[in-house]
Image (cartoon, rainbow, N blue to C red; front, side):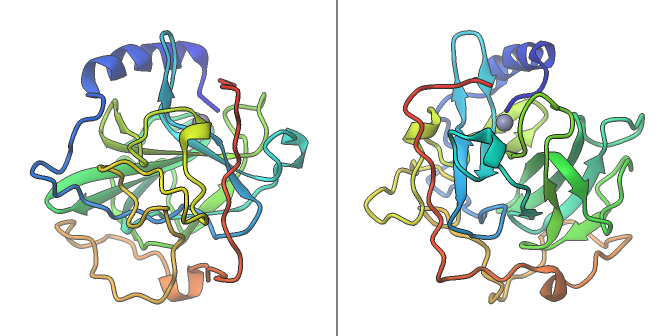
Length: 259
Ligand SMILES: [Zn+2]
């Protein structure tokens, strides 16, 4: 689901100028792959809309739902987790001072990877995790991959149903397709299906199909971010244990839908 049309059209203009289609961000083929799925793996998670650009509009993120794609009334809230470690900024849509813009309750995480800066955005949250300060004007609080940052909702877009709007950016107005596919939802892969590895060469998932966060890893802290003013709990207590017995499947929508 997208943000209000006016904002979308403004952003579309900016985006068409700044985002090179199919650009290689890793330079000499060293595209960093550092994202895991931004939610715990359950068998009823689906992609409801993909990353796409039309003649007059665009959807610069991925919409994830928990429920049946063709029945918005079934879409349930779910925990939203950090797709990689970094530093966080959050807003509720009403602050004058915040380091990110957005509608509804939203969280942005700044990541440093291979000397580059990336951002992941999590929009329309029902609730932001209490450990995350809202309305600050800087990225000062660390979060770890897999840590709960909020719960999916529809704030800022009450005309829609509960979902997570997820984005990855390299800077203001510079959105990327995490899958490097650049198409409608039907073009995106079913991660649990080894026959359908649809990620492009410059995808940002650590694996293709994208994998959920598994809290058994020895990951160094985010590089180059300096000390944190406020710690955000212990990821080992906040992290979601992915259930390997459950498979993530992605919904397939054959007709483009821009709502
Ligand atoms: Zn969306």
